[in-house]
Length: 291
Image (tube, rainbow, N blue to C red; front, top):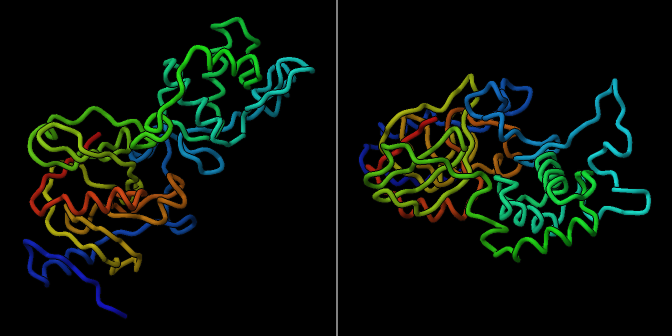
């Protein structure tokens, strides 16, 4: 097996290998993993994954003791003769357009995902009640025309913003120098230079059993290609900041989203963004992990 190519700037080889021995990998269901939840420090309740793994939205389910009537269903048409064109459970680029317009109207705070879940349903109901439309939570032609008439065509940046998660206010420790500013509250990493945000990306943390450490650190060493010596999982673009904990790309995060967790590392799911960040970050740059 080809040896990993490690870029070590400030540590000797023996020290680096010793630190990497604690390097983390993704936790798997049924193997001690604790999926993010409202009680977990890595998953605020406001950003829980949906039942099908799509971040940020969940599908409302009827109470088993009180079946919903057609008029109460989130996806029910306004009347028997009116068919919704977008409804709960759907996924499309048109829904992404709808969500971007609802953000313009200050009815949604999360970035567009293209998936019509509970947050979109709630925003549409609010819009309908504000404009005298039947409050079904689904979008019929009349609702869609009204939304379009009160908003503008979304830009590409509005449709696909830099991060799915809304970036949190930076910690005061992030306002000077070169910093990877990592918020557990918003689950984002902001690369900042002298108080200015250069780039942002979604991140995932360790479970409550293997938490990601909080505090102020420095990048000790970097490895463009690395494999965890404990979990034998690939950790491309690793930037180690606290013993074996590192910021690195995770294919598991890219595939499963917040349905999983790391063993303490800061996972990134956008490989292209992390590759660009890896080239910019230098050994000695600050890392701040905070709530």
